[in-house]
Length: 576
Ligand code: ADP
Ligand code: MG
Image (cartoon, rainbow, N blue to C red; front, side, top):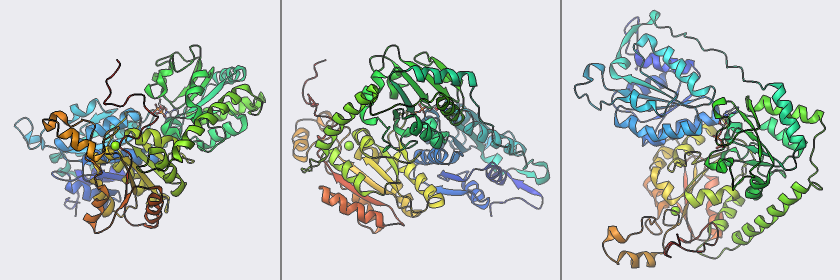
C-alpha cells in the first residue's frame, strides 16, 4: 500500500494525494517512474482517477483538456528531469490558451542535489516561465497549503498553469499525522466579478447606435459557461455573432444568427464589436486594419483587466465575468427594446449575401466526390455521419482549417483544437481526456479526433492508451502524405531519385499513403482504409457501433488538395 506511514505517520505521497482530492481534483494523467510510482498509487488510493499515458507531452495536453471541459484543473504527473521537461510544451499551450492545469513532477532527492543527482534539473526555475505559480513545498506539513494555492491560481481569474516540485525525499518523508493541516481549507468558490452598471449602459448605448454591430464569442465565454446567457442575448436581439474556433458551440453553429460563413466581411465591416472572452491576437487579426474597419468601436469584456486595450484601444472595457455581463447587457437592451430585423436590416442583408456566395463555393467543392478526394468532400461526409453532439478534436494545418467550417458544434466546449498557441500534436491527448470525461459525465457521447497525417504522428502512440482504458475514440486521419500538402507516390519517387536523399526530399513530404489504420492490428483489430465517400460512410458507421475501443479511419486524399485553388503550387518559383 502507498501509505508507507507507521502508526501515527503520514508520508508525502499520501499528503499530496489527499490534498488534491480535498481541493476537488478528479483526474490525473501521467507517466510514472522514479520517484513517482508510489505517488500515482497514492492518488488512486485517495480516489483520484489516474490515466497512464505514453508521452508526458500528451499527458499534459490531456490534463489541460480535462481542466477546460470540467472547469477544475486536471493534474499531469511526471518523473524528474526529462519527464518534467517533456511537459513544458504542454504547459506553454495551457498557459497561452488560458486553460487550468497543474503539473506535478518528482525531482531528485534533496541530498543528491548539486552533486549530479539522477535526472537532476532546476525544475522550479525551468517551469516558472510557463506558469502562474511554481513552487517546491519545503516540508510535508506545507504540502496541503501549496496544493490549495496551486489549484486556486490555476483555476481563478484567467486560468493557467501551476507547477509543484516534489523531491523524492519529500514524497517519502513522514510527518506526524496530527501535525499536518490536512483540513487546510477548501474555500468557497470565488464570487464572480460583476460588471459596473454604468459601463453596461454605455455598451448598450453604443450597440443601439451601431449600424453594423457584431458579437464575437471566444473560448473565454466557453470557459465562463455563459452559453445560456449568450444564446438568449442572440435570440432576443438577433445580433449577428461570430465564434472563434473554440468559441464554436457556445451558441449553436447552426443558429441562424451565426455568420461564420461571412467571417471576413463581418470583421471588416462591423462598426461596433462586443468581444466576449476573446483576445484581439493573431486569431482575430489584432483587431487592426486591413482586416477591421479603422474606426471600429470595441466593447471588451474580460475577466483579466491586463488584457484591456491590447493591440487596439477599446471604446468600453468592462472587467467582468462573461455571464453576469451578458445578462446585464440583455436586460439593458430589452429596456431599450433593441432588436434587429434581419429581413429588412441592411447589415444583415449584406452578411446574408456574403454567406450565400461562400456557401456556394463550399457546396461545389464538397459535392465533387472524384477520387482522390478533396478535403471538402471528406468533411461533408464526416459531418453527415457522426453523432451530432460529438466532441470534435481537430488538428493539422489544412485538416483543421478546412474542417472548422464544415464540422459543426452545437454545444459548448465540444471543440478542442490546436488553439491560441497553434500546437500540433495535441489531438490524441485531448481525445483521451475528452473520452474519459464522456465516460464519467456524458455516457454515449462520442469523441471524434480528426487529424492530419502529420499531426497524428506527434502522439500516435496514445492509441495504446485508448485501448488500455477502453476509450471509443474515433480517429479520422485525413491523409495527404505531407505537412500542408504532400506528393503522389510516383512524383515522390521521381523527386527522391534526383540527388542526395536529404537534400532533395521536400521538407513538407511525409511517407506516401501510409497505412496508419494498420496500427489497429497491434491490438488484434482491423482499421479502415478509405479512398471514396462510400468507404468513409461505411467506416464511420462501423466505428460508431464500437463502444469499448478506439477506431482508426485512414482517408487517403489528393496530396495536392487545398483550401482554395492555388494560383501557384509550391514547385513554382515564388514571385516575392
Ligand atoms: P479565443 O481563442 O476564443 O479568441 P482567447 O483565449 O484568446 O479566446 O481569449 C479568452 C479570453 O477570455 C481571455 O482574455 C480570458 O482572460 C478571458 N476569460 C476567461 N474566462 C473568463 C470569464 N469567466 N469571464 C470573462 N472573461 C474570461
Ligand atoms: Mg497532412
